[in-house]
Length: 225
Image (cartoon, rainbow, N blue to C red; front, top):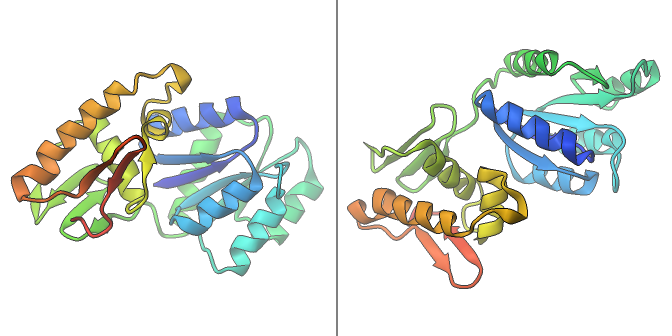
């Protein structure tokens, strides 16, 4: 399941990403309403965890704009403790469920799974780039119909690049997304994994999909190149 967490409390957002990733979810994070709205408009998410009090655009506004644009992701809104008016407005603006802060992490995960079942999209969609298929649900990769064996970390790097196919992704973005190591992370570890991925998804098949943009980062060709 692919989840977007839109939460301006950075410690809480980081804890949710860490915990949900460990549960097997694919998790993106935004810290303000404008970024959250943009992320949700660009990527197909199964569920969005959306706080109400956000800088830029509040959760109500983000929710209503997504629904007006036809986005059908499940939306779980985080409301104030005992905030019955918050809960009512959350549902009125298009949220599917709500949870009051502070909340139980176990309950949050159960709500997300239940919400995914209700909207009929338990698993994330596979990303298809030409003959390269990256299936986040099964944690599998195939090239020209041939299974490609990847380590968990290699798959995480590839999945992140695949979800942003055609874009240049910096080493720092990959470190933050895959290793969550912050500014102290070693960029060389990214190079090691990129090299390993090239040997597995490109070289044996005569492809050059995984490109280095010198001085900036990496790009995975949108057509699987």
